[in-house]
Amino acid sequence: MSLVTLVITFFLSEVYALWRGVYNLARDIQTALSDISLVLASRAERDPKTDEYTPRASEALEDVAQLIQLYHALLWASLTEKFAVLLTPNGLSRMLSRNVMTRRQYERLSDCLLRQEKKRDSVGPEQVTMQWIYVRAIRGMKDGAFPKSNTLDSALTKKMFELNGAMGGIAAWLDGKIPLAYGQFVQLLVDAFLVLAPFSLYPTLGLWSVPAVGLLNLFYGGMLDLSKLLLFPLGNNVDPFYKDDAVNMDIGVLIRETNADSKRWKRGLKASLPF
Image 1: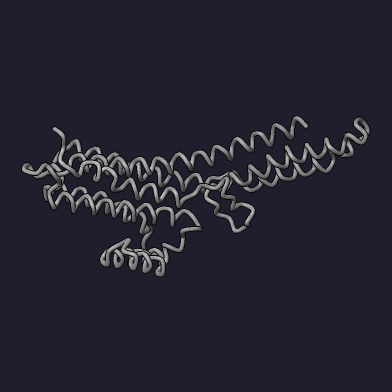
Image 2: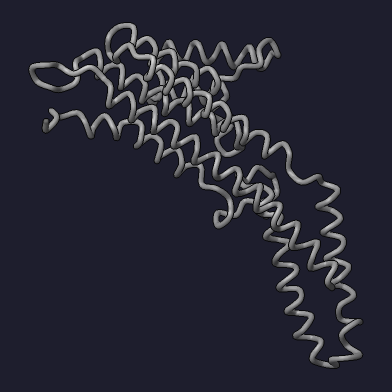
């Protein structure tokens, strides 16, 4: 019994570390995108007479916000089965019809997707849109929407590195899950323990072995089921058992939060400043 307890506890702790690691990186991506919006909104050019954003600064902030929303949606489309349809010709076409992207963006991303499918290029649409965020901010500094500053450039570069690292980190967590053989061993060990438990407990407990075995099934079987659910934090499994809304991360909520954050800082500073 002590061996089974040790193994199932270790298994649960490891898969929870996987779930927590993916969750933390997802929040890191949100934070980095929000920080980019915050820095650019605070440093954007303002009209000296009205103290409000100049037209070119407002346009640059809108462009960055739109690219952030597009990147974040395509990122999760590349990582989850639920949103994978977005990274298909029909998905991109639908996003174009809903004004999620412009015609030129649609053409570039469609070509990128085609090249990726034909193995001509390893850069996916989600990575291209991440680069667009950085390039648009740099272009904004060149045309005067944002000040030319080494500090601002360094801050943006750091955030882009954080985005790239977090995006790769999530993929690494998902690709480096606990080996299947170990999970099968734990399943076999727990099943054998629960099957043999009634025969082991009856000579000592008699009829009380019935509720005792029920408690063992509830405890050890429940821990095993929870461990298997945590093993797929994004619900990327064809088995309906693993698609549990109480355990899987709700990517739709993350996308909506990022969409709101992409324009929140601009709205906060849109009016003239009180000083």
